[in-house]
Image 1 (cartoon, rainbow, N blue to C red):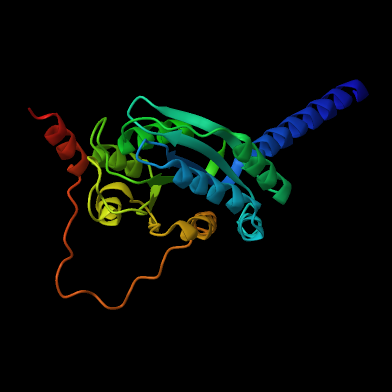
Image 2 (image 1 turned 30 degrees about the vertical axis):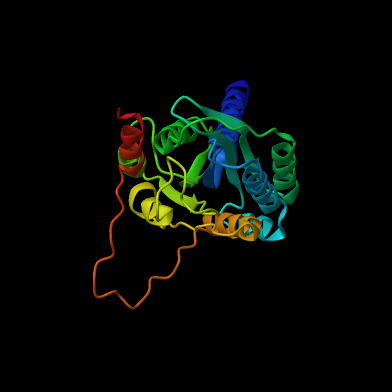
Length: 267
């Protein structure tokens, strides 16, 4: 009888241990946010602009404000991945998924990013960047409370499927897309368009709490990226204005890049 009792006790303890191990493993994969930073490295980005962009993300994860934003989350940890993109055939993970809980985690992520080389590749496929980012979210290995894709770029989609198709698919999965339109120079290239910020507003971003922050001056890069990352980690949305315009604002042409590609190759 005693032996049977010991067997039952052993089984009960084993089951309890296994149960707590499973709960612990599940808890270890839960994060407040899974954030994909998808960064434009197309040829329209000048080398000094690329350097400023990279430095902005590096300095963001070294900043105490970012560490504090992570700490104040419900779970106190996030997961981030940094990737670069250009045309439809080029998307590359630069720093893979990293769970950030302590400042040391963020500093390590920043150091890995700072040591990685930059590249410049032809064409601009915002839709390709969104599609690749979605795949990264599916393969993140974490259970996030929120999923966000942070898209930076200096031009419209001119390769791959239409950007609104990719955006709408991401939004249907509950993913938020934020934007960082880079507007450092006047649109004078074959692929450039006026009002890139309006294009991002109407054609790229979307989802719960979505926002964009244009960069119009080089000296704004680092601070803008840092502020944007803090907002994304904290899940903060800009307050809606109480003053509504009397007329509807003009809408962007979401096929602007594709139209320019057609004009360029027209005989």
